[in-house]
Amino acid sequence: MQPIMNGHRQGARRAAYPARYSALGLLRRGLTHAEWPPAWRSHPLKGSYDVVIVGGGVHGLATAYYLAANHGISNVAVLDKGYMGSGGSGRNTAILRSNYLTPEGVRFYDRSIQLYRRLAADLDFNVMFSRRGHLTLAHSDSSLRTMRWRAEVNKAQGVDSEVIGPAEVKRLAPFLDVSTQARYPVLGALWHPPGGIIRHDAVVWGYARGADALGVHIHQDTEVTGIDVTGGRVRGVRTGRGDIAAPVVLNATAGWSSLISGMAGVAMPIQTFPLQAAVTEPVKPFLSTVIVSGTLHVYISQTDRGELVFGASVDPFTSYSMRGSLEFIEGLAGHVLELMPALTKVRVLRQWAGLCDMTPDFSPIMGHTPVQGFLVDVGWGTYGFKAGPVSGEAMAKCIATGEAPEIIAAFGLDRFAEGALVGEKGAAAVGH
Amino acid sequence: MILLPCAWCGPRDATEFQHAGEVVARPDPATATASQWRGYLYLRANPCGWTTETWYHRMGCRRYIRVERHTETNEVRAVYPGKAAG
Image 1 (cartoon, helix red, strand yellow):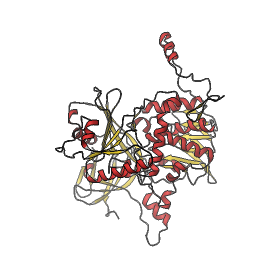
Image 2 (cartoon, chains in turn purple, blue; image 1 turned 30 degrees about the horizontal axis):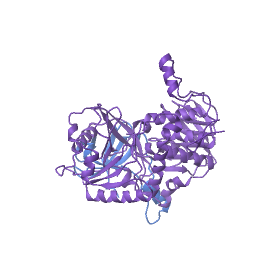
Image 3 (cartoon, chains in turn purple, cyan; image 1 turned 90 degrees about the vertical axis):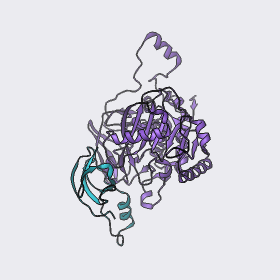
């Protein structure tokens, strides 16, 4: 009998490779110093697959995993021009939350949090999800008003969000300056207990291992150079390692997504902006929540290692450059110190940038395109990582059934032609 | 630091400017179809390479310039006066 685990079919299809992780296995390897087998394998590039997924990040790998796990479609290739998780999946600040502004957005991201909560068990991989709560600070009457709005929309969708006052903020985050002397005093906050942080690389590796075990081929260092379309149908992709025929191609890239869609002749309402982040040296644990300030364009969390992770809004102009800038780190440090003056002596270890595909309404673009068989899961702006599992689940269903599931129906490419935008700027971005 | 050579003020730090985006031809509102208009509003080439775009010298002469910029290296090739963005 096949055990039913967390709604996913498991068992017979899970091959002998790889062995499940267990305490006994850990003990045995600890005693014998035996090598761990690689968590996923390399395969020769086949000439054809049922589904080709461009982009080996959390979205692409999650789609591949759910195609195999939920729909039994395992003749799938995931291609990445670099290594897995080398794009946005490895560059984000690993924050999870579902306190969005529109009912469509709240429902969607809440499903993702639900999947994240059971992901470690589903994937047999420790993804280190820490549900520590998420605080969005309000420094003005208008942001307080938006937070009340968000809290009500959230509660109507069954998502735990509440507006709290400065005293409660101080209790949750004692190192925050909530005095009225601050340049931007904290007037209140949106408190979202289900939010938290996760180990972002582990999510990528867990999905890769899970997909590989179910027969998916992961091809790293395989850059897509063209997409073949004839008669309004996608026929396959051309790569630096050879051509692949496929009736279904999914664009699950970030940063370069408008260029990949352009190869299939599909124009995208997307502009690419870098987003910079930074991490400090590790310090003792003192910050148990995620702190976000839209006014100060910053979000702060402390990792399990003790490092403080800072993120910001996107850079003020479009670029494909992933170099950090001095203006950014200066501005960021100033904003962090306004919130937490105690951090003056803490040193920044490194800074980096990732590419964000911004859409006009700060919502993603998911589903079918005018080219038959060519699907997109793009336009993920600054909120793609937290949506990885639900996007994978929904896109897998979209591919398997040929129809966009209800949960992503609002995010279709055709919404721009119809003027049915899903405006999430008030809750998705810190720079507004 | 990125220097943008303003057509009126000379080379100035890019932080003085506001990026107004790619130059997109504006269709005639009287004759444009809905899809042409939506294309003008939303669709961008978003190239990884050379692009022509409008910048506004917000903290300087407060005039618009056209800039040819490489979006991967941020190298600036040519600058000329631009008309005010519509």
